[in-house]
Image 1 (cartoon, rainbow, N blue to C red):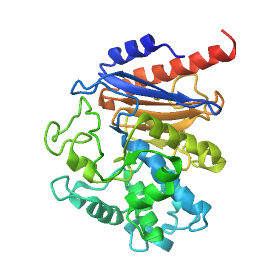
Image 2 (cartoon, helix red, strand yellow; image 1 turned 180 degrees about the vertical axis):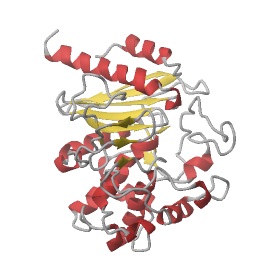
Image 3 (cartoon, rainbow, N blue to C red; image 1 turned 90 degrees about the vertical axis):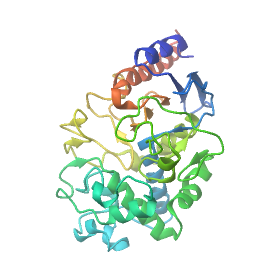
Image 4 (tube, one colour; image 1 turned 90 degrees about the horizontal axis):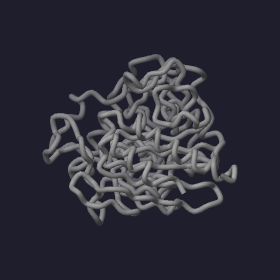
Length: 346
């Protein structure tokens, strides 16, 4: 059992009011450890729901991969075969594979003027903005992490299945995995409230992560609400898909934004791959082939096949302060150390 006091000390150092930590080996059921409270002082529990931000991309990628497995799509299909009206489809080199691995040449986000963040914004408006967004780089030359690209693959899922993306996600991914999760619908119990939300809408009715308005957007790149067990199931689902965790970026540089830009930025079909990246939210001893995803809400879902261990940290503080890079990585190290010691009989 990992040291709970050590994890508590790390959360305190990061000024995180609480977190739900979960971990599992392939042959064992998941363990879930709730610590502390949310930003409103409500104690966290094993089944507490939290916004997981970009961990949502793991679920979106799994929906696409499921359609590929069923023969409805191919990874190297050009975007124009399915969404010819998308601006990015005018370059025939934008494929589903490149969208999933962030090498399509699309920008990080849609331009604000295409989808102003204000009352009335919804997923159809966001989808239209994604389709209207042009490339900013040559496809296959740089890893530019892109919410826009994941918006396009969600529209593609809608086009192929004939269903709204949230419904298709539930049918293709969440239901089969037994995950309790919500996209665009209000959960049956209040999600944990996050601390340290920043920006012009902090504290208001449009506050990111904490408002019903934000949850209603159903963003396929970052809007999922789930619990620690659900996030763990999403990252573990890639362990049975070897191609999905192979590096797709061929040594290209890139990343998100400073300081998360790297000379070599390996990425798979949904999950990020650790490689030699620094700084990073995976622990120092995690293998270069370890994979998963972090979320700006203060969340990480990671798997190290070499250690036969997957873990999730869902914090009640956004990642804007950098705590996930420091204390989040250190908590992952605590988990790896605990299982390494157990394996050696210590």
